[in-house]
Length: 164
Image (tube, rainbow, N blue to C red):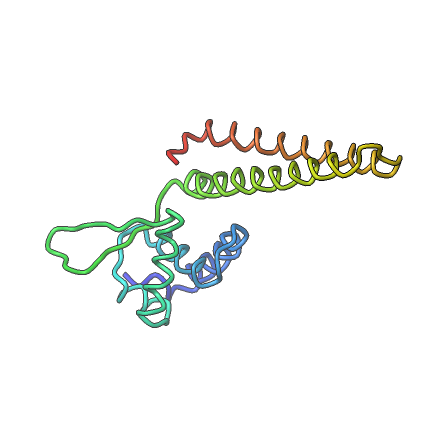
Protein backbone atom coordinates (compact mmCIF):
# COMPACT_ATOMS: atom_id res chain seq x y z
CA UNK A 1 0.00 0.00 0.00
CA UNK A 2 1.63 3.22 -1.17
CA UNK A 3 -0.42 5.82 0.63
CA UNK A 4 1.90 8.75 -0.18
CA UNK A 5 0.76 8.94 -3.83
CA UNK A 6 -2.77 9.86 -2.89
CA UNK A 7 -3.13 13.67 -3.07
CA UNK A 8 -5.29 13.96 0.06
CA UNK A 9 -3.00 11.63 1.98
CA UNK A 10 -0.04 13.80 0.96
CA UNK A 11 -1.88 16.88 2.27
CA UNK A 12 -2.61 15.13 5.58
CA UNK A 13 1.06 14.16 5.97
CA UNK A 14 2.20 17.70 5.10
CA UNK A 15 -0.18 19.35 7.57
CA UNK A 16 0.40 16.83 10.34
CA UNK A 17 4.16 17.21 9.84
CA UNK A 18 3.81 20.94 10.50
CA UNK A 19 2.12 20.20 13.82
CA UNK A 20 4.70 17.58 14.79
CA UNK A 21 7.51 20.05 14.02
CA UNK A 22 6.12 22.29 16.77
CA UNK A 23 7.42 19.66 19.19
CA UNK A 24 10.98 20.21 17.99
CA UNK A 25 11.26 17.53 15.33
CA UNK A 26 13.23 18.27 12.18
CA UNK A 27 11.13 18.41 9.01
CA UNK A 28 12.15 14.95 7.77
CA UNK A 29 11.64 13.40 11.24
CA UNK A 30 8.18 14.95 11.33
CA UNK A 31 7.36 13.76 7.84
CA UNK A 32 8.62 10.25 8.59
CA UNK A 33 6.62 10.05 11.83
CA UNK A 34 3.52 11.38 10.05
CA UNK A 35 3.89 8.80 7.29
CA UNK A 36 4.38 5.94 9.75
CA UNK A 37 1.44 7.05 11.86
CA UNK A 38 -0.88 7.48 8.92
CA UNK A 39 0.11 4.15 7.37
CA UNK A 40 -0.94 2.43 10.60
CA UNK A 41 1.44 -0.46 10.08
CA UNK A 42 5.05 -1.45 10.64
CA UNK A 43 7.36 -0.60 7.73
CA UNK A 44 10.93 -1.35 6.70
CA UNK A 45 13.53 1.31 6.00
CA UNK A 46 13.28 0.38 2.31
CA UNK A 47 9.52 1.02 2.29
CA UNK A 48 9.94 4.35 4.08
CA UNK A 49 12.77 5.37 1.76
CA UNK A 50 10.74 4.59 -1.35
CA UNK A 51 7.58 6.29 -0.07
CA UNK A 52 9.30 9.50 1.03
CA UNK A 53 11.85 9.64 -1.77
CA UNK A 54 14.82 9.79 0.60
CA UNK A 55 17.86 7.56 0.98
CA UNK A 56 17.80 4.51 3.20
CA UNK A 57 20.67 6.08 5.19
CA UNK A 58 18.56 9.17 5.79
CA UNK A 59 15.63 7.02 6.89
CA UNK A 60 17.90 5.07 9.25
CA UNK A 61 19.23 8.26 10.85
CA UNK A 62 15.79 9.75 11.30
CA UNK A 63 14.17 6.55 12.58
CA UNK A 64 16.91 6.29 15.24
CA UNK A 65 16.08 9.81 16.34
CA UNK A 66 12.38 8.94 16.55
CA UNK A 67 13.27 5.78 18.50
CA UNK A 68 15.32 7.86 20.97
CA UNK A 69 12.29 10.11 21.49
CA UNK A 70 10.10 7.03 22.00
CA UNK A 71 7.82 8.15 19.17
CA UNK A 72 8.29 4.94 17.21
CA UNK A 73 9.09 1.37 18.13
CA UNK A 74 10.89 -1.52 16.50
CA UNK A 75 8.47 -4.33 15.71
CA UNK A 76 9.20 -8.01 15.16
CA UNK A 77 7.20 -10.06 12.71
CA UNK A 78 7.70 -13.76 12.14
CA UNK A 79 9.35 -14.49 8.82
CA UNK A 80 10.52 -10.90 8.23
CA UNK A 81 14.29 -10.51 8.43
CA UNK A 82 14.42 -6.71 8.09
CA UNK A 83 13.77 -4.35 10.96
CA UNK A 84 10.23 -2.99 11.04
CA UNK A 85 9.18 0.28 12.66
CA UNK A 86 5.79 1.52 13.74
CA UNK A 87 4.59 4.86 15.14
CA UNK A 88 3.58 4.75 18.79
CA UNK A 89 -0.02 5.45 19.68
CA UNK A 90 -2.09 7.18 21.06
CA UNK A 91 -0.71 10.43 19.67
CA UNK A 92 -1.32 12.76 22.59
CA UNK A 93 0.15 10.45 25.21
CA UNK A 94 3.11 9.54 23.00
CA UNK A 95 4.14 13.16 22.50
CA UNK A 96 3.26 14.42 25.94
CA UNK A 97 5.17 11.71 27.80
CA UNK A 98 8.37 12.65 26.01
CA UNK A 99 7.97 16.40 26.10
CA UNK A 100 6.65 16.73 29.63
CA UNK A 101 9.76 14.95 30.87
CA UNK A 102 11.88 17.35 28.79
CA UNK A 103 9.99 20.36 30.13
CA UNK A 104 10.30 19.21 33.76
CA UNK A 105 14.04 18.71 33.34
CA UNK A 106 14.46 22.11 31.67
CA UNK A 107 12.44 23.92 34.36
CA UNK A 108 14.46 22.22 37.13
CA UNK A 109 17.76 23.09 35.48
CA UNK A 110 16.82 26.72 34.90
CA UNK A 111 15.52 27.05 38.46
CA UNK A 112 18.77 25.63 39.86
CA UNK A 113 20.82 28.11 37.84
CA UNK A 114 18.64 30.99 39.02
CA UNK A 115 18.98 29.82 42.63
CA UNK A 116 22.77 29.83 42.25
CA UNK A 117 22.60 33.40 40.97
CA UNK A 118 20.42 34.33 43.95
CA UNK A 119 23.00 32.87 46.35
CA UNK A 120 25.81 34.83 44.65
CA UNK A 121 23.81 38.07 44.83
CA UNK A 122 23.07 37.49 48.52
CA UNK A 123 26.75 36.74 49.31
CA UNK A 124 28.10 39.72 47.39
CA UNK A 125 25.65 42.24 48.79
CA UNK A 126 25.64 42.21 52.58
CA UNK A 127 24.14 45.70 52.59
CA UNK A 128 22.31 45.82 49.26
CA UNK A 129 21.16 49.00 47.54
CA UNK A 130 17.51 49.53 46.66
CA UNK A 131 18.23 48.43 43.07
CA UNK A 132 19.90 45.22 44.21
CA UNK A 133 16.98 44.53 46.58
CA UNK A 134 14.51 45.07 43.71
CA UNK A 135 16.44 42.73 41.40
CA UNK A 136 16.77 40.18 44.19
CA UNK A 137 13.02 40.30 44.90
CA UNK A 138 12.22 39.91 41.19
CA UNK A 139 14.65 37.00 40.99
CA UNK A 140 12.85 35.31 43.89
CA UNK A 141 9.58 35.73 41.99
CA UNK A 142 11.19 34.24 38.86
CA UNK A 143 12.43 31.26 40.89
CA UNK A 144 8.94 30.80 42.35
CA UNK A 145 7.54 30.95 38.81
CA UNK A 146 9.91 28.15 37.76
CA UNK A 147 8.88 26.11 40.79
CA UNK A 148 5.23 26.48 39.78
CA UNK A 149 6.01 25.43 36.22
CA UNK A 150 7.93 22.41 37.47
CA UNK A 151 5.07 21.45 39.79
CA UNK A 152 2.49 21.84 37.01
CA UNK A 153 4.49 19.70 34.58
CA UNK A 154 5.00 17.02 37.22
CA UNK A 155 1.25 16.94 37.97
CA UNK A 156 0.49 16.61 34.25
CA UNK A 157 3.18 13.92 33.93
CA UNK A 158 1.68 11.96 36.83
CA UNK A 159 -1.84 12.22 35.38
CA UNK A 160 -0.69 11.10 31.95
CA UNK A 161 0.70 7.91 33.46
CA UNK A 162 4.16 8.47 32.08
CA UNK A 163 6.40 5.47 32.53
CA UNK A 164 9.59 7.53 32.49
